[in-house]
Length: 78
Image 1 (cartoon, rainbow, N blue to C red):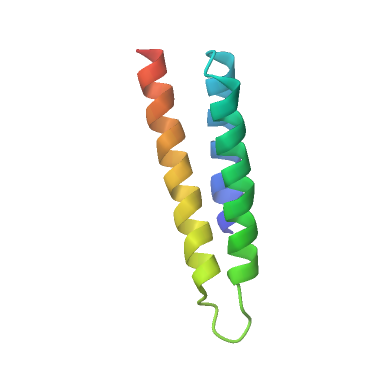
Image 2: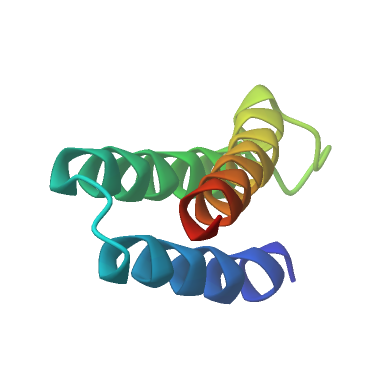
C-alpha cells in the first residue's frame, strides 16, 4: 500500500518541478534517491517480522523526499 500512496504524488511533484525550471541535476538526484528508498523499502520487508531497517529507511526517505519536493514546489511557485 505504501508505494501506491506515495509514488504518484511524488512523481507529480517531480514533474511540476521540472516544468518550473528547477535544475535538472536536482530532479535527477531526487528521482534517483526515490528509486533507492523504494528499493530499500522492498528489501526491508521481511515476512517473519515485517520490521527491518530497510523498511524504515525506505518509508522515511520516501516521506522526506515528498516533503522536500512539496516545499520546493511551493517556494518555486511564489
